Length: 279
Length: 306
Image 1 (tube, rainbow over the protein chains, first blue to last red):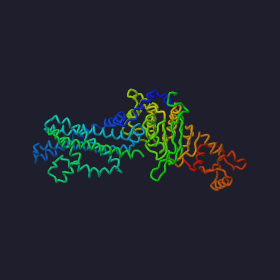
Image 2: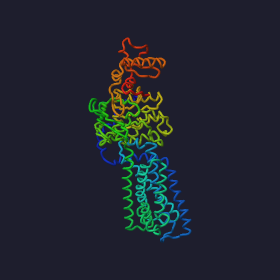
Image 3: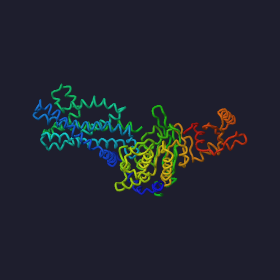
């Protein structure tokens, strides 16, 4: 054991010590971000099958239940078949669940139970880099898996549109905001059970009042105004407009809201969790 | 070895001046001054709650000092802590390994975190695995490792980038004697290789065996510092006289010691009188043994540990 230990001080790699030091002063170093994400990718390698399975099966069930169930009563909505209306809306639901939940649970488990974040922050990694990398990884995943409902809907007869190529990016942007939101929630949660409050009191209304299953235009004016503050509503509108070739100027507004939400949630996550990771 | 870091005797590897840190009403570190020279194994000895772990966390800027100045490897903390962390390795007291990953995967992630160049990563991982005797377990998931193996993996993780300073927080706490011996020889090997080691411990034997210099901490500050042998000579003398007997006899001896102004303490089933070499003919009947660091520690802190 001591023989290889003795070679440690020899440190052949130390010659570049100074250049490593010069690199370190920057914020949000790509090397730090990819290091954190490499861990996520490694873990994902163990779970991708289950994740992929549920991301295909869930929208299929939604489409069958709502599309065929409701669709039998309501063939068309605003000139589009109800199945297509729901399919485009379910993208947002998929994004919400694949970003807010990992944001909350993964963060809490790695921070509180496994103490992974404590271990990583002893290495040359800032809180800002750690959280940004974690949120980035979740939103990349959300961007990819957000497309799944659309693929399922194509099988249900949705017409392919070039605008659908924008959907992964919309899903990524929305996922970034909700993942960061989840991290901020995890930072203030006292126990993991506290997430139940957030799920039922915040996430469920967000997902129901987003125009996923029924249009909000029929709801009272107060609810319609409130929906403007629901990032998921803007995600639904963007996905629907892109997928059904309805993109217009109003979609810049929707995208703008999502960008603002992502930025605010990102800074909030860093400040909230940062305060708790560093004594 | 000579190419590693500053020459011995140059700037200190770690320097703390007037450092204080409170958690609410608890003053964990209270005006700590500490200088760790390059190339030594430095022991931070103290009972639980003396502020050792808080001090360790401040050295990686995972806890921020309320007062005072901290310098690590010539970098000022917390402003330049990231640069300092590039060149130091940390072995925490609590096991914070990624239980879902294999040994190799964990080391690979940390090789990236420590910016080991892509071309050198696989070799660095292999070297760390060998260093910790974990090569046969390289692809075992951490959850399936024994406690001793996990501790060795923690050490390997902190050494993946061949740091010139290593912080070990209670490196052998809770380990069985054989694993402890293995870790001790590993730590000794580091020092031989020119790496500066700062080790916190509440095991006296560990400090006595490994540390070139020991700082005794109590209530958030250093109350004595020096090579273990010197600390013993200075605070416990050459010899200790242990008097055994029934409780009555022990009470008598304690009284006698107090009356004569001898420094004494209860030590299990005996009363130990320090500086027995100065007792002349007045000493009661007992067993003489050389003074050790525990005697000095108890004399210094008035606290029993272990």
